[in-house]
Image (tube, rainbow, N blue to C red; front, side, top):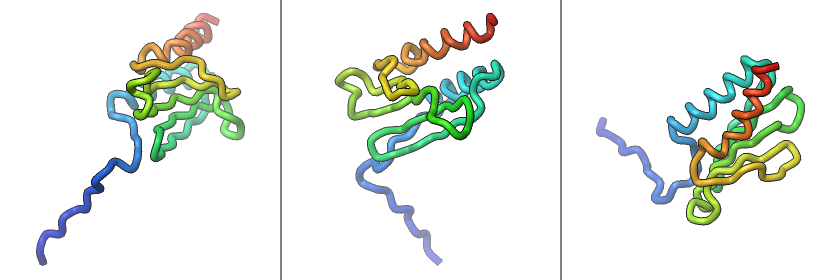
Length: 112
């Protein structure tokens, strides 16, 4: 039996997180879980965006969504932090500064 080539789509059909990006997000998630604030998460890899949603409880809207939209890379930045009500909390070209509001919240949780 011969080798069957794996089909490679000509265009990317799904947006995903790179390993370093996901490591950074999961590190923050783990620290928020350790602080007792977050209890669940979900990842949605779609055609236009990759979304990481963090929940305080499983049966509610996410407290924060971290979105990666490569189509916005050359505009306001492909990263966005979306709050529970759907408002954009922070947007930018780099993941670190976009996660800063959550990092600050974590510092407050740890201090208390």
